[in-house]
Figure 1 (cartoon, rainbow, N blue to C red):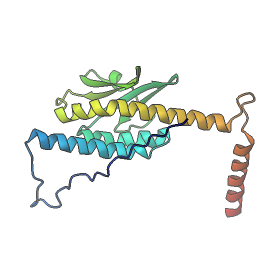
Figure 2: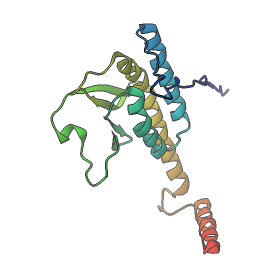
Figure 3: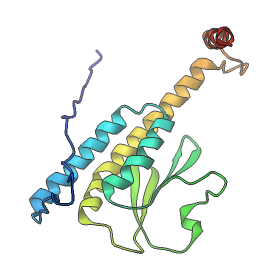
Figure 4: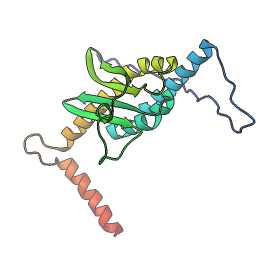
Length: 193
């Protein structure tokens, strides 16, 4: 028997932001309010990741939204999944000048392992030279790191399945369905010209 599990994440709206200088957001000092706030931010981020199926979409979501959610300026993620090493740096830098964040300059980093089950797939690093990482950000990263590891591993598996479905493993040539799809795309492009 196959058993299907479905997890529904509740729809969470981010907290309202001030619309003018005369209407500043209310500061809360309660630990309980702080906990609710970081939990809401984590749920919103997870919901954003849910729709990202490709590695590219997932990397874009991480680069654009994770630093903002954590309240940090920079972060990096290094993964080694399926023998492929990738480094994601936020904010994104041009490929020509991209270097590994640990070798750019000396510094102090808070790191969190990307663990999926018993396997460590990578690490998230956040610089703490200028300011220490907030307690809410630490809690959020502790919760998010395993979820990110699972999403990155799933995106990698989807990429592998797409590649296996479009390329013959013996000859290395495109499969017939992939060839037909490419032919349709070329014919559409030729008709537009």
